[in-house]
Length: 149
Image 1: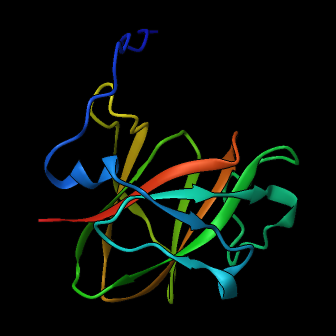
Image 2 (image 1 turned 180 degrees about the vertical axis):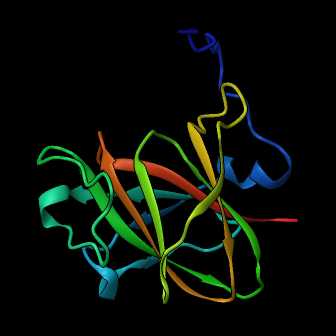
């Protein structure tokens, strides 16, 4: 395995990912009815809940154990296209729409030393989506959802 590069200082991402550096505080919901809004193009520093207190609208493929953390967010998409969701950890991510779980179309890592651990792309139609975060080791995670041109 290749070791992660040593980062003497964080590197601010640019372009679509530039909002990553200025997150707003958000508290994840415990279920779909109480999901906090994740604003597209605005990073969020999300306070998560202990996994046993989260009722996911759709059972995550990797729900995590009793000592993990998770939560539910909402994302409103106004224009169809590819949406990239960046996470600051290796947590599990599900996006759920009216027609069920959305399949990811691409996966990747963020720029080195940016703090973005993983990025997942989804082809989304206009509508309301539930973003489920599960199996996170800590009680906080940074999240950014952006439309990809």
